[in-house]
Image (cartoon, rainbow, N blue to C red; front, side):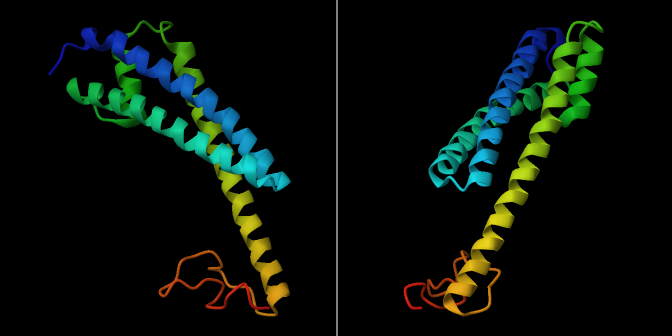
Length: 160
């Protein structure tokens, strides 16, 4: 086990890195939402790419923090991080950063959930439109790969 005091500065750095990435992620999710609502495929593709890159960076800081918690014998996740903060930092030392991290985490999760619902609604509308265009009932797996490489209920979209 490591001395927790030697991990204070690196722990703080992981919190600040996570907070910075969450701010960027919030902006990306807002752009993704605009693209989903406006049907802008190019912007959506760019937002998804940026989101994946940002999530990879965020994962790096979270994993580093989890390793530090493990090194001092604390459980992972928010519970362990909260215990580390309360045990090794003065009450006001990280209060603002910690509060913003928790608030922003919730906001990002809500935005991501909302975007997921928008994406599902868009997919449902696309299936309905395909059903109308092809004269076939909409299939819930319009874009899902099927054995044999067929899509749209086993019918080629090139044949109407």
